[in-house]
Image (cartoon, rainbow, N blue to C red; front, side, top):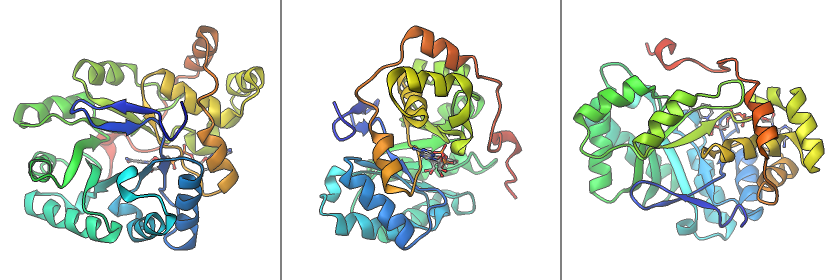
Length: 276
Ligand code: NAD
């Protein structure tokens, strides 16, 4: 098994890679193009971007120039908060698709649950799915309450919920809720933007396995059945973050890392996001 072949089956049967490259704050132009090309060379087959990141055009360019067939790459993008609403989302999708230069987006997500808007937005995602323009649809930053509300009106259930998830924010209840409803949880900020790499058990466990702290954190998400998208723009780190298929964490390792949980967020709680 390798980063190129390791996939998880979503509720609708679509295969999604276990590990992808996140490109938040990877600058449009050379920086993100080099990151995407390095990732594809290292075997990554999943890229996570968003219209908000302002780098979709460069991501698309890098994919086109990489020599890897676009069909082999699982591409995720997201509708931003000020693009939500039924017609607005359909238009935002076309803008994203054009920038990315692909016919079909693999996974389209609602970036944040904008109050009063996200249900209408979900209707647009369902239409895109029914029209075959996206292979899977999902949400991001949804709590179990948002999911409950969404499920009251949804014709198609979200296949993915992408949320902040790492050892300091081990969202066990949300994970359980998503598992019960066959919604795949996906971790953003899996390395705590680098802050978690120095944490004692992570360092110690990395040494024990002859691995890097970042690899231990990526593996921790996977061991919890959570897909993950670590970000880096440094080719050596991108390559190293992919080398997580030749070891496993044992029960003792998991217990020690789980002990880091303090329900601490590096980003916003979805209920406190400055939506307007
Ligand atoms: P992250 O936890 O992936 O940390 C990235 C940082 O960790 C890098 O900038 C680098 O400084 C460091 N790093 C990476 N690999 C390393 C290595 N091998 N050794 C040492 N340091 C290393 O943080 P993130 O970028 O915030 O999250 C990952 C991705 O999740 C994003 O790029 C984006 O695609 C997605 N995301 C989504 C949302 C959302 O609201 N849906 C929010 C934030 C991020």
